[in-house]
Length: 146
Length: 146
DNA sequence: CGCCCACATGCAAACGTATTGCAAGAAGAT
DNA sequence: ATCTTCTTGCAATACGTTTGCATGTGGGCG
Image (cartoon, rainbow over all chains, first blue to last red; front, side, top):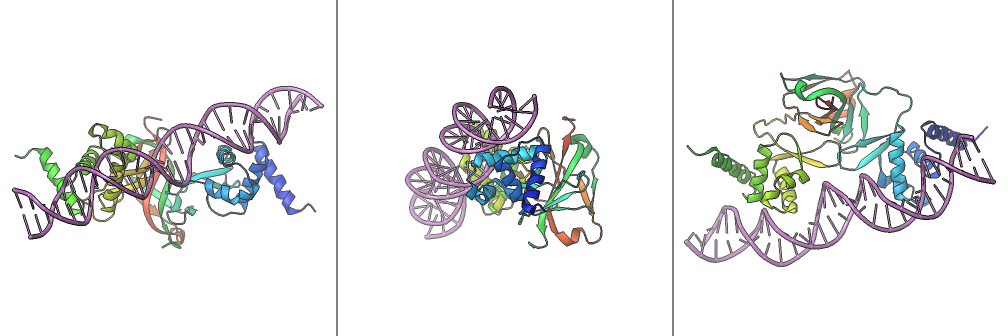
């Protein structure tokens, strides 16, 4: 019968502790805000969104970095030279195989699970410089922004 | 019998004038430097590379912007929040944008001119979200960092 | 060939985001 | 309850990007 609020709060608590981070006010607030938000969030947007809580901007910045280091959020760059962060899906363990598509307009990130990318190098071009490709990023315009 | 130096200089002159830009010392120097360089170049790197010419940094910055507006260079973003510019291939009319490879260790950026990327979408996956792919970014580990 | 004007340069400064130093404060293990 | 270590708050710095403005210059035109 526990209210959902405290339930999710406990979940966040476990999430933080499990990641080796202390459970503090700012961090819980950040995670909570991420849960209500779809899509990447910049540091500035986060500061403004939590302005009423009056957390220090540097604290929130470091929180984002820490959460990224703990694997709870991803840091993405949609091409406007501003770091953005998004809650990382905890369910999917391996996400390395499929390419990601980033819309340069709305910044939405799409996992192209079904898309296969085939690289056909000319002799001596790819092999000479590239050892291993770990991530494939496609940038462009999504249908909605077209 | 004209020396190749003056020949290419004339070519650059025509390139600039043809693009509607005045032929000035800084602009010629920028284009010349791009010709000797493989891969994208940041503003800071360009300033340092042409330090002996003692051009103003703001001038070089505006040159990059102007050259981009004239279609002579492309502006790319490899994910480190720094704008980079590369000479645009004038021969290929259809945007044959080559993919870029970024080493996640040393940060070196490589133009994979010869690499062709073929996307084979499963039915209804790519078309539904992606309208147009404008940039392809491959991240991984380069040979030297392996 | 020289004039003239729009465009380009140089210099300085503003700006926004990213990043760090340090002392005070809080979390959580014992 | 205490103590250690991590975190916060505040300030200041670093860095790339961008702009204002006065001066200088390319190149078209007479």
